[in-house]
Image (tube, rainbow, N blue to C red):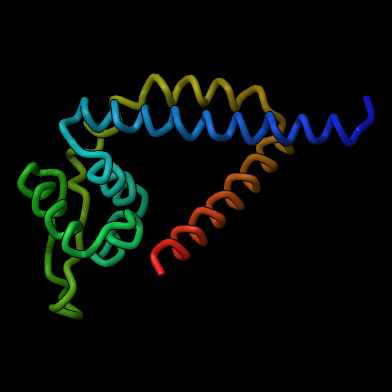
Length: 154
């Protein structure tokens, strides 16, 4: 088999595997959200806040690709459920700063614990170079998703 058909097959398999990983990731996210009594958008918001600490409602809207109205409803729901605090920004009273309540972080992490342990064992089998390749690939995929979301939003 020459290299060109082998490359074409390898690319097709990479694309198929990527689609299946994305599909299973979505199914997994829905299952976790359901277990926590949340929507997937709620979970995305909480994951984002776990990464950044605090964010404005506008930043949450941008990250979740939701309208500001939908984010306002979501944040109200998450605040009533005790997951977040929402305070007016002292520097700009028009903005609301949302913060994940630290005492709820462990509860949000619990459904991921077994998966995270398995992922850590998986990555342990990779060389530094393989990990760096995967990081570059994921960063490029993220940039492509962001560009497409931008285009879809216009």
